[in-house]
Length: 86
Ligand code: SF4
Ligand code: SF4
Image 1: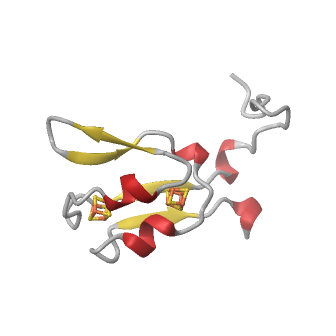
Image 2: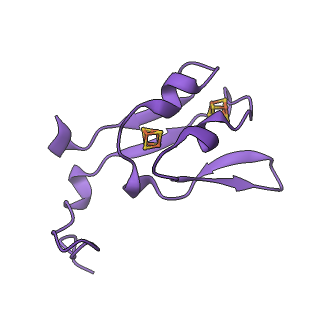
């Protein structure tokens, strides 16, 4: 698949190397679920086996920072801004 595929709204998606990402450091995560509750883009999921929040749709992140603001364990969530936002 080309890295210039058309997104759902008719604009070309950014090439993969320019996309950002959302990561959770599970060594620090307290499993409180606040990021899941707060995310306006609904990118998080939940793993019933581990009882931990998962990052299911990182490509839909708005980079609003609400999850980092609400997370009680600072440094747990890492946002890598896409190069197009810099
Ligand atoms: S930065 Fe905003 S949109 Fe992205 S994962 Fe965090 S709360 Fe959701
Ligand atoms: S808000 Fe922070 S500590 Fe709570 S589940 Fe999300 S990443 Fe883990």
